[in-house]
Length: 193
Ligand SMILES: C[S@@+](CC[C@H](N)C(=O)[O-])C[C@H]1O[C@@H](n2cnc3c(N)ncnc32)[C@H](O)[C@@H]1O
Image 1 (cartoon, rainbow, N blue to C red):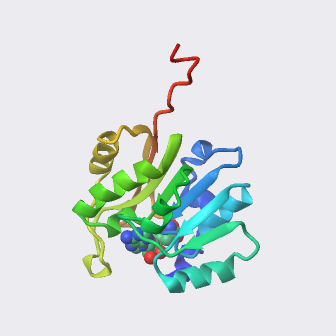
Image 2 (tube, rainbow, N blue to C red):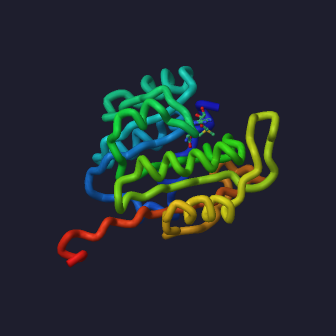
Image 3 (cartoon, helix red, strand yellow):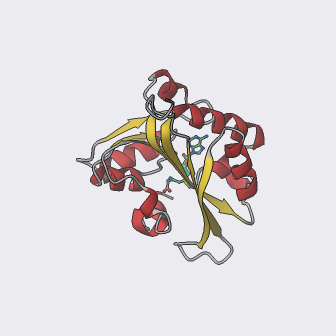
């Protein structure tokens, strides 16, 4: 699996949303970072990256595969993300790539609340989610873009991008949903009058 994750690049996986990634250096949380492909690319763009990954094996491979990057690896998992939440440091960008379908419905509700709480005002959430036939033997659950948009909307996260793309690894039956959300910015005291 690790070599599969590294077969594609950040630019390929996120090609439809690259314009939504902040260009100025920000704090980024990559949840379910796998072997760190995206964490390393985001770090190379100048961001400070926290990579959450529950698999010790993937964390070890990620550290070895991407040395010299400004990535802090954390052993944590959705829906609680208890270690990250305890640090009370919000993020401008949260990325969740090929992870959402590993959570069952009740976990997805709690996970969206937790992610909302970890976003800065004006921060963005980027999600890439597998849509279509689900290999349940791999611990995946069916998810839909509509459900994800609704969960986000319930927490006042505005949808700013929705698209689908074919599988970068060439699997004909796999489609990926790209969604980007934004948390409202709090009005400045000037705007509030
Ligand atoms: C298909 S891989 C994607 C890895 C990486 N984001 C990428 O795009 O290459 C799914 C990752 O999600 C992690 N994962 C599974 N369940 C998780 C959970 N509840 N919370 C956080 N990460 C989880 C797995 O350990 C695995 O690294």
